[in-house]
Length: 129
Image (cartoon, rainbow, N blue to C red; front, side):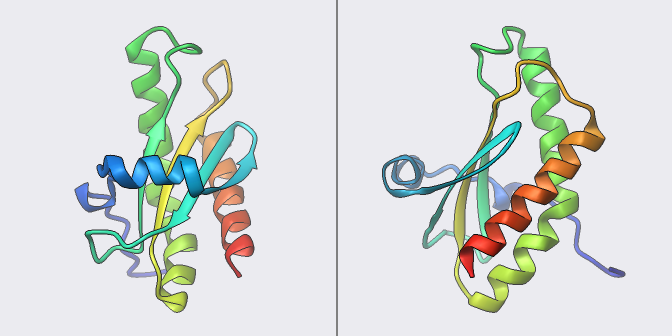
């Protein structure tokens, strides 16, 4: 695990409305409470193996401060655990578009979010094989 790239810059952000719409119309689902992950193999505009959108519903968290904090925690745990996805995707030589939705009604601790993201990514890798 030494000398790992843990950067998580703009190139990981999925901005294409066309691909996001495709994720919801054609994509597959992986669930790991409190997360709901939709994914779709896609040709992305970046050399990175995946791009993602993180969503925290306004219906469950009225205050933007709360939504943003949860998104920050999720982004940080994805940054730390992305090696699980990248190693497998680079072997298979294709790219994924991901859409992560947080479904819990209260904020979880960073440790719990991080553990669940790890399980979610491992489940996704298993499903891709």
